[in-house]
Length: 404
Image 1 (cartoon, rainbow, N blue to C red):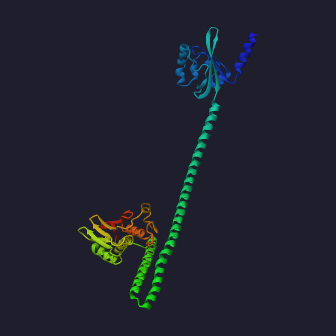
Image 2 (cartoon, rainbow, N blue to C red; image 1 turned 45 degrees about the horizontal axis):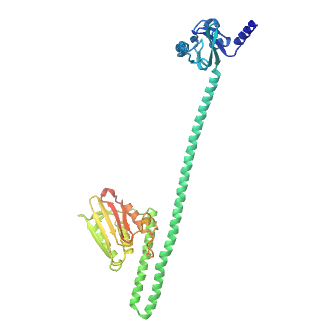
Image 3 (cartoon, rainbow, N blue to C red; image 1 turned 135 degrees about the vertical axis):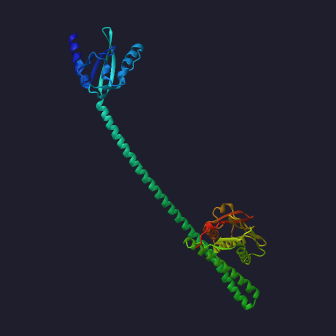
């Protein structure tokens, strides 16, 4: 019976799919089955009696004896009863992966270690192929993700462009609505005044009431001036939008220029409103577009007249330094509400405290754009019921301008 069991065990070992190697406690190979011989490409005669490290590549070959010695000294297993993946060295020098399981057997008063070797070559090749496929797949995913990101970015840009276009359309629609509302109101008021004054003049003519006739003739003149101002604003805006306004720079005497404007605007000032002009600086020659500058100043002084009461002063100051020309118009009028100040230079915008005072809401927008055409910049300071001060600054340097 014992011999039959031994024969059975031998048959099992010799026909096992995995390699089986036994070594003694000094690491010498005592037996090796056919599967292990096939794996390592050795015959039994070539390895039996040799140290098992002959089947190991560097650095495990140099460390193996140390592993056995440490286990024998400490009893702490490094591989025995645990199993791990290691590398094997074939006779032809090639290296292959395998899973090694080691067990310890006490036999005839000595220790024998049995190694069970399962070849992992196919599994590792499959893993490498899978990793390669995974890497390619990741590259494709990354490439497609990048393409998708570009597409999304393009869509976002297109969305933003559409959004901006819609915003501009809404702004344009809003401007048109404000224009229609403002124009219908601003035209209707002076036309109604003209019509009423004409009827009354006809009546007073029959009664030969010259004083009343002169009064209403004055109203007609004022109404016509208002209409002319509205039309001029519209024409200025249309020319600016069409890009047909280009500054023409000429050299002129600023003081003489400003005094003429002061005299002109004093004629349309309210009762006892006084426009006080003052110039600071030793020089008075400047190089700007006279027409654009005059439009800016007249608009600002006109607003000061319009939004200030009778018996008030309007300050008109110019200051010329080697670096800068500054034009300031200051009044003591109704002022601009804080909430309205951020919209002040928008087309067709009028502050909420203007009431029935006529205006198109275009003047300051035009002034800002005219000043910008001459490299100028406009600022203001205002308090409700305390007045407003506007300042336009231009660089006083010939190279900033070009002759047209």
